[in-house]
Image 1 (tube, rainbow, N blue to C red):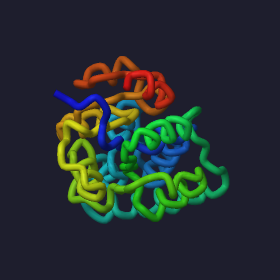
Image 2: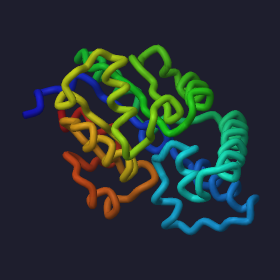
Image 3: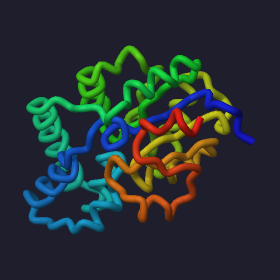
Length: 217
């Protein structure tokens, strides 16, 4: 049985706590097009939430081509985010404050590499309020592996997965939460995947956004 409140809340970044304005999907499509590859909506949907290097390996196969596309993606996405500052999902900061007021530890896990994620978190003013940031390039396997969630637990000293709340906007986020044994596996509809897709994965809650988290706790 899960405890009354989580000890640790692990949040995805783009689409979950940071507004997903289509930039990530657009850059994926542009990078593939530059290499003469077309990406259908369903193919893109399947890799949303994955570590970005792993996503390109899935789409192009392991090897120099995937590495070249990953490098192009990172350079391009950083330029796009630098040109247009990120925005938080409405009431995300208020939700973080509500959780911190109840001594719940906070962590981010993201498919971005650290050099991309840290400036985004800083621009949103969140760097001082979180206990851990785990990036896709820091673990052996990205989502749906539970590795990033387990690493967030290790970095914050939380030992019981039943006390973890995993929150994300993609099927891979929910699969990772389940694989970690998280007590709360929460999907939000503010990002990449809609309700019809998310409900196909085991979950405890599907919410409109992170603004509704206090209501379920």
